[in-house]
Image 1 (tube, rainbow, N blue to C red):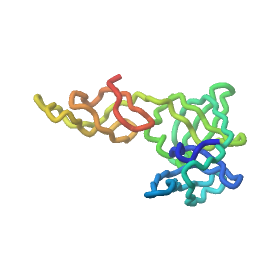
Image 2 (spheres, rainbow, N blue to C red):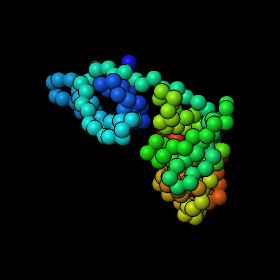
Image 3 (cartoon, one colour):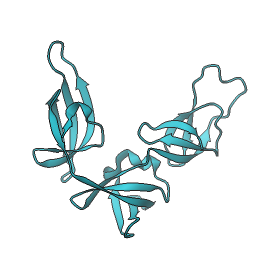
Image 4 (cartoon, rainbow, N blue to C red):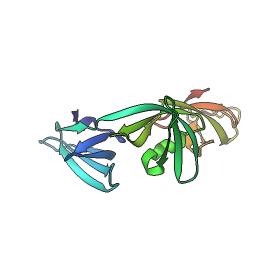
Length: 185
């Protein structure tokens, strides 16, 4: 059981006996009463999206998931192909299954495939991945007063903000949970 206040995007929960992936979570607080947790849920089995409201403090069941170590192989446009490391079995997942994880996938990246009742429903990325910067603006001397950063495009197409001293062609570590720059690799 997990409290609805702790729900996060991507979690798989059981609602009315059916597995749903949390797409969006919004917390609303009332003046004198308890808060309301508004969620958008996508059915793992049918793909239908529904909205559900929970009272603060309510509990829901977490789906019984299993994880298997795997390696990302390639994408053929429609599917992303993975191979489990224990028995070398291959699985093809759609873009709907992996969602925003597609921005962090590079060949041979080790991930975990998430299974619900022996059916793959998604992947779990490592917390940090190393990606190459393919395009960023040049740095000018003395351009560090603001303490901000500059936009950069990574090899997967992901756009992030990097410090001014980072150049094109360098490798950087990116946090897969927040999508933010961590450090140079």
